Image (cartoon, rainbow, N blue to C red; front, side):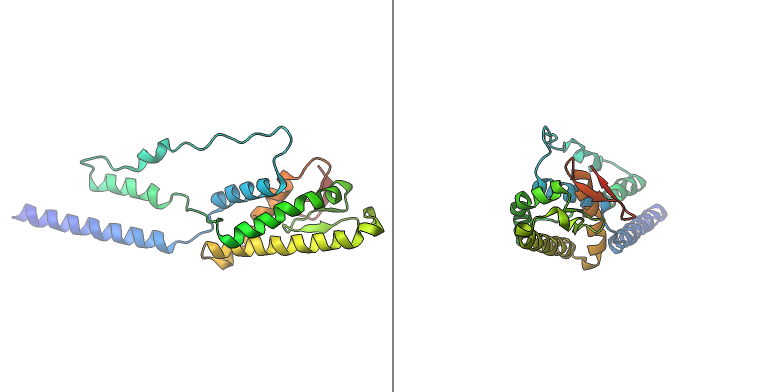
Length: 206
């Protein structure tokens, strides 16, 4: 009888502990930087296109999914060891909504028009994740109005993209972090001969 009561108490304690643990994990909301970086890399690559000679990496393997399966006969402590990695697994960072797809498509279509201005050094990728007018004198008077309109439209879409991604993930307050992640990707994926800003605002030619 005593053993049964002791076992019941141990079971109740374990259930309570798991409940508290899961509640703590649920409340602990953080910006998923790694998932955001992967999403930004895909979107920027789609907008700018692949670099010459670049091929797509093989799809990620799902073979590790079984590592989260709880073995039969596992003890309570083993259950905790199993639960914690699952709770801290990378969240699904949503970048697939109709609004995001529309913005991304507009930016992709606009890239071919902006590319000559990037190559001429008239505009570059700024540290704030936007297109920055670097040298307007590199643009002919005939193309000046077109250039200004393209930069204005591109920056409007980039601002909208960062805002929509944060909103799609249920955290509008993540917009600054999303912008920072994308700013790094624009710089990393800029083509040879294009101008980019570093974190301190200094320009350099790739």
